[in-house]
Image (tube, rainbow, N blue to C red; front, top):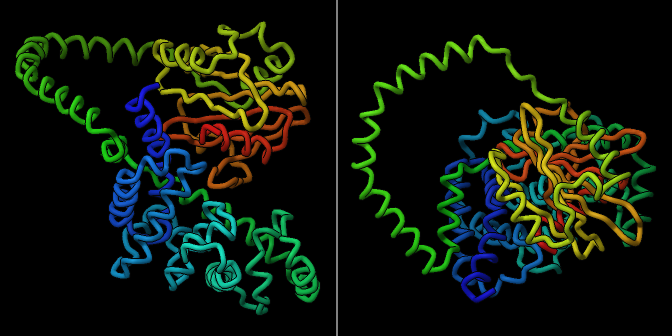
Length: 425
C-alpha cells in the first residue's frame, strides 16, 4: 500500500472506535451535547498527530486519553440530558467528583486496568494507589453501603475480586479485609448486578451515521476530502435533473405503492429465525466439518473481505476480524441465506489447539436476544450464552449490526479473540 492508503487504514481504525469514545464521554459527563463535542475534540487531536498513533495497539484507549484530558480540563460541563436513557446511567450523578466518576467509568464500564485508569486521570502510571483510593470512594458513592462501612481496599479491588483477579501485591491485605467483612458476598452480588446494568445502559448510547461521517472527515487525508467535495458538487449539480425525472414518476409511484401495500398486507409474513438456536446448529456443523461447508475456502483475509463485501443485499457491512497474535488463521467464509435474514460467517482455526472459532455477523441488536449475564473485556461489552458443547458471546460492533463469536473456548477467551481481531492485532 502507498502512503495515502496507509493513512486511510489508520484513520479507519480510529473511526471504528467512534461510538466507544462517545459512550465513554457521555457516561463521565452525563451530558449528551458535551459528549458529542468532546468526541469531536478527541478525533481532532488524533487527526493532527495521526502518524504518531498509526501503530497504537488500542485506538480506543488513545481516544479515551484525549477525551479524558478534555473532560478534566473543562470544569464547566454539568450533568444533563441523559436521564431519559436509563435510570442506572443517571445514578452516576451520585459520584460528585468528576475525577472519581471518570475512574469509575473507565474501570467498571469500559474495563480499563488500574494502570490505564491512572493514565487517564494523571497522564502517568505512577499514581495507581491514589487512583485506587479515588475509585474506592466512587464505588461507595454509586453502590452504597447502608449497614456497614467497607475498607477502602475492598472497594478499590472489588472488580478484580469478582473476576478472581486480585493483584498479588494486595492479595494478602484484601483477603484479610474480606474475612473481616461478613456481608462481602452480598456486596459482591450487588456489584456484579449493577456493573452489568450500567454497562448495558451505557451501551445504548450510539452516534448517528452522520456523526461518524463527520468524525471520519477529521482524520481523512486532504486528498480524500477533496475527492469527497468534488463528488458532492457533482451530486448537487445533477439534483435538479433527477428531481424533474422523479416528479414524472411520482404519480405512477403512488399507484404502485397502493398496489404493493395491498399485496404486502395480504401476503404471508416471513418469520424471523431463532438466532441462537440456528447458529448453535450451524456452529457445531462448521466446527466438525468446516471447509466442506464454506462457499469460499481461503486463508487470504483480503479474498474473504472481497467475497463478503460483494455479496448482494446483505443489509450490513461485515467486518472481518484479524487475530494473528492469538495464533489463529482463517479457513474461509460463507453466507447463510435464510428467508428473513442473511448471516456472514468467517471460520478461524488454531492449528496448535486444533479448535475453531466462528464469527457471525447479521442485522440486529443484542437486545433482540434473550437476556444474559453481561461481560466486559477491555471495553468490549458482550452477552454470554452457553450449552454443554458450545459457548457464544454477542455484541454490537455498530448500530443495527449484531456479531456473535462461537466456539468451545470460554467466554473470556472468545472476547480476547474478538478484541484483538477488532484492533487488527
